Length: 196
Image (tube, rainbow, N blue to C red; front, side, top):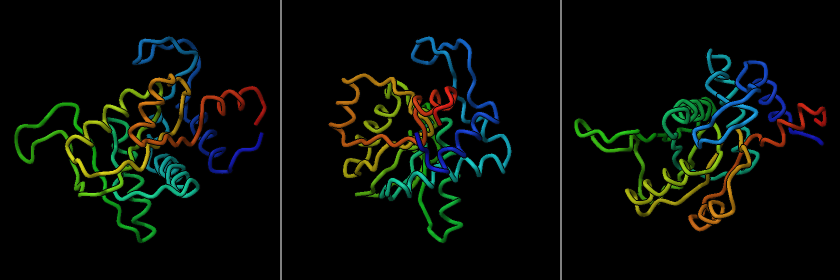
């Protein structure tokens, strides 16, 4: 099996920083897993964070994702959104970004969403990992309810654990949400098995 250079670099970065761990882990979904991914561990220094940003930007460019606004899901998606926007700024492209709050703010600017989402924006949701898809779908539905004329540009994650069931996949399709991932669980296990 062949793997794009940026995907291989990202995988090696995750392994090298300990962002991928093996053992027995209980996930947010309640399921037990033989591995755990915490992309925050791959962003502990500025240099490491830039490696993560580069992988996300290269995936956007490789997949030719068209977007107007980057939306980071609290909490790990927030720094990813910032890093992507900063990398684009270094290329001379000014990208708007924002994020959701876990709880609604009732003072200052208030609300659940931070950022300048505008009408007819194509919104790219970013996060670290996708498992069941619940959090990403819920985030899109809340955004779509708050900003009725926005459009989905997709969901971009570092790793797709390939655990989403067919019912959820259908819900994503109904919303027009396409899932883009830099790596999949299969990529990780192919690497461990020496196939990559």
